[in-house]
Amino acid sequence: MKYMISFFQPMSEYQRLEDPKQVDAYRGAWTAYVEAMFASGLVVAGDGLLPPSAGASVRIRDGKRQVQDGPFADTKEHLGGYFVLEAPSMDVVLEWAARAPSSSTGTTEVRPVMERQG
Image (tube, rainbow, N blue to C red; front, top):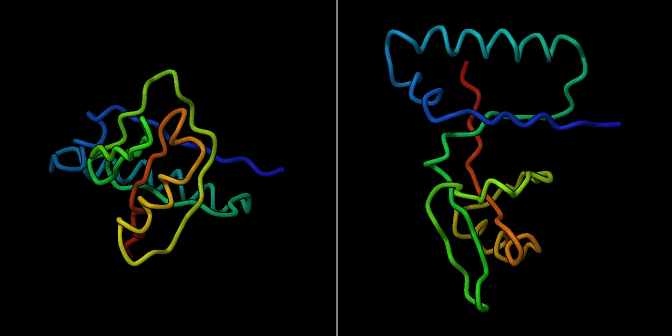
């Protein structure tokens, strides 16, 4: 059985990446955790995501696509899973997001994947 671990953080945590006094501790903690998970041999696939401001949310309302910068899903909505797509642009992925069943009843979030450095 496979499990996906999704990490939800307040914006104050993302802001630590911009604070020279906090960035090393923040990244160090995450690096240690991720390295330990990979060392366990349990990781099948996974990536960090860029901050929510880099993404978009798609909804279909009254038959029209609405795209909103950032993932502003209602708190009553729950993450049900994810696919990783390789596409030439955000617009291509937004078209696929608009076709998802979740766009008609909730929100389909699109976020660029953070590329691992080093």
